View 1: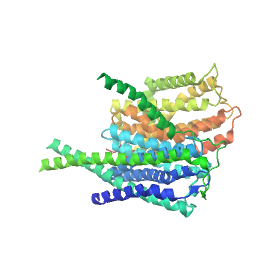
View 2 (view 1 turned 60 degrees about the horizontal axis):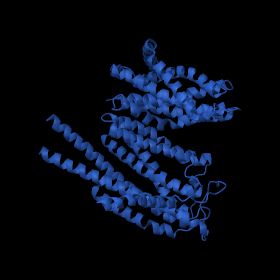
View 3 (view 1 turned 45 degrees about the vertical axis):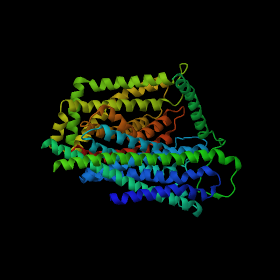
View 4 (view 1 turned 90 degrees about the horizontal axis):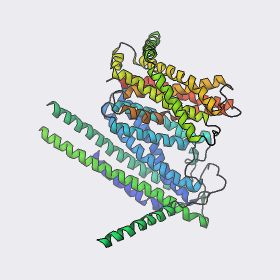
Length: 219
Length: 98
Length: 227
């Protein structure tokens, strides 16, 4: 797995590097103009932010109910990536909003719950770091509750009709918007998978080191 | 010595001023639209851009892309560092066991 | 099923007996809630008058702060005497033990609310008798959703370091949906002209979150409390 990760990161970094040219070639949007181009990074980051919550929840489920110790490593990894991609979403979003809506932030359901999900990831990270022994199960329980927010965030814009563009925007995109979007999405997803892999490897190594130290203490 | 200190004393406000200038350009208050627009149902492409529109928006786009780059690079660096550390520890422990 | 309620009842009775003897948690929680209300009034009252529509927010903030205190304290008592392990060793369903702890906490918070709500209404001119049934339902459902997650987390935190600081950090983000529904529903009732359909709408969402939270908590209590 490790051998594949490095070229994966290289490829996605290369794709991210050429992304500005492809995005530059895309047409301007009629009402939002240039600032709409933030969308090509905002959307993939947001989708992967939600995906990491789901992966974290499912891994925690496997860890808690099916007693799979390795699943915990994947939960840790996806929670940390959730923080990373959540930060991207929450930074690019207001930058777009400041121009498109005139304000940095509105307390609409999707924005509020995204911020809450980010806080859940942050609390999860703090629990992992400072909880000490016995905190892994609690963290898994926390991840299960955090996962509940994802469907809510996803459908909220369609129910409440707020300022945020609806989910129907993406499938109806004209081709000239769609190509850069899916290009960026592919680059982000590959980056996500590679980083997830690396972080999970790190967590597994850490667990192994801890086990070896325990062995030494007993011997 | 005195001269260096004096230079530093001059440099600090200069640096603050430069930072403030950069920040004010990045956070340049874009013309606030009077009425809040309806949520867009779909994005419509357009060929001609209003002239006054582009300048403030480019800061936002640049800041957004810049942040994504910095975040990704920072994370990759941090993970590589931690991985190297743990792998060193792991190989050391395993060699000790033998 | 009968067994479930019997065990839960025993746990509630045990907690209540301890609490009635000492009254420690009830009194500290109540005093804390009143202090929170007081501090908020310092923060928002201008020229002797509070702005409109703040009563609901203050009420729920006080309930959630006081609730966290009560949860931490309930399980701290179990930890101090090492009785939680004994409780978990008992030949009883784990979910039933959870339900018992939750009910005990709800009773305690209910008592606090009985004194807190009239106080807030008095200080901030909130019409609590306009739709008393709806208000009670909102309070019960909101406290249930909050306490359901809180009981689970506080129980899990018993074994974890720095549990006192971690409980609010973990609990508040998770229970934000319940808090939003509670505040918005109560605010609709506390308006100058109470908006009952709006309160009913928020009540519906609140009940949905309650069902999800309680189910998930009952379901996860068993694996997370197994060593």
